[in-house]
Length: 306
Figure 1 (cartoon, one colour):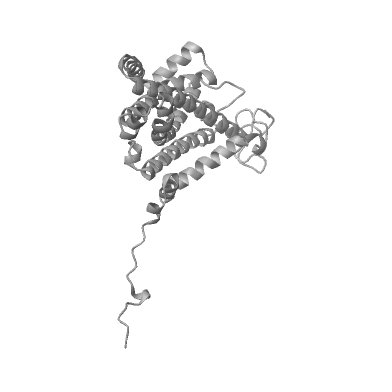
Figure 2 (spheres, one colour):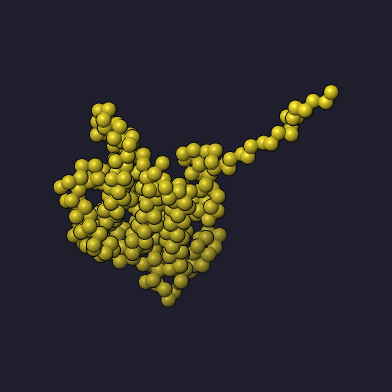
């Protein structure tokens, strides 16, 4: 008698979930991010430039401050000895670009780190405590944001004096209100959630509630905003250096190289487009990475949702 029981291999198999749905947390975010080819290319470019800046003392073929004003050494074209030629003092452009990249990236990174730290503290205090504290801190933030950023930085540097450190301080002050308002919004949307109320009812301390529940929900939007701010910081620092308000000789940055390029534009256009292209490309790359990460995380998670 023939069995009527269905064969195992004839059973309908359940559809498998997409790979992204099988992952969780940052693994899912990384998988989604890798699907955005332009963001991956931008990330690779930024990492490459960062490595060049970090290892500039090792990679640079010449001392960036070494001058050679002998015959044929000023404004020399590309060669095996000087890959990108020389400047008006016979200094190797390749080496100066590497060290300029190092200075610009480090200055902008430090400014953004300071702004993120200060903005996070202000945003948490403002959003969690509320009341008079919230009003005072947010009015101060609104006052800073009401002034054009470049004008504010130039004013701060004018008061403190020209220099790379003071330029970093000015950038940090200008960017801090952006992160403060961002974190405050995250705190306000998170502190009324059920799990936060449950933790409060169970007697959890405010510090535990902040670092256990509120901080994790603020990390994703802070990272996205920090990447976008890095792109803007490069442009602003380059402008300050071009105006002579940032790094001072013998140190160099991309902005100071651009300034020197315009001073001798009749002799060589190379010193204009090389640092200009570096600043523009890095600023574009940081924004592309931020857009890709924001899409990978998802709007719901950026907004503080589950």
